[in-house]
Length: 315
Image 1 (spheres, rainbow, N blue to C red):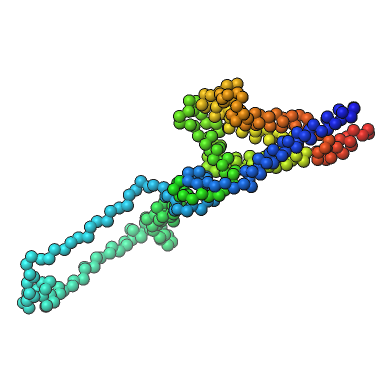
Image 2 (image 1 turned 90 degrees about the vertical axis):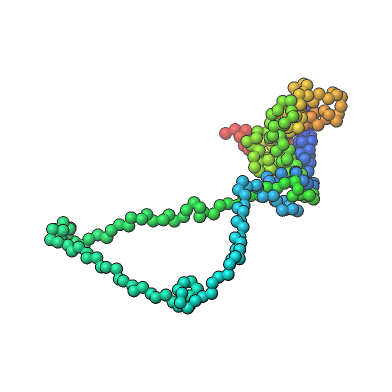
């Protein structure tokens, strides 16, 4: 192998690794280290997803169907129209000063209990008579009405965040994923760009953090040449998802698609076509690195080269 061929095979993967590694290191660090303000509806949506944000106003409690019971009016007592008669000594009544005569109390007649005859004694079994079983059932230990009910969780609204809240840029990606999981109302081709079943609850935040961590750590791994093929394949998957959610999917929803999904803008306009070609170029660079490998100037070469030499030695 000539010197030129050796330089071409060893240096080309290294330049690819430098370009891809620095690009994704910049993208991942920008999502995790940079803080931006969120205010109003975006901040309320993030708080409802589970982000720990302290609202400046009290959150709105969920509405209940039951209305509070109205208290009945207190009864009014009208004064008597005629004066009450004065108490008399000869009369007995509620206003009399003499206590009424008590009626003699009579004791209730005692009932004669039947005695056991010889015939009934023969019918009784030998030994002690068992005690009678209680007819009433024991009360349950806890009734459904007595069990405590969970208090409804607070729902945050845009008015709960009148002032900006500073958060990481990665939460902006979570909001974008949440938007892509919803079907647009006024779109010509209404469809969800992201599966709605994978964007419920706090899942948009998890996907956003997964993308940011993949860009940061896989970019560093590609730059150092460690697990290069696996890291480059993961970065290619991230960029394919970015192409679909940012460019191709929105263009298909608006029916402004040419060339299989690109926006129908002027073909020479860099502002319209530049982001799409940049993302598409990163996908191709990552796949080129997957097929070619990291090259000899990489950590993979230093780690895997001794094992390959041992396998090539004759027995």
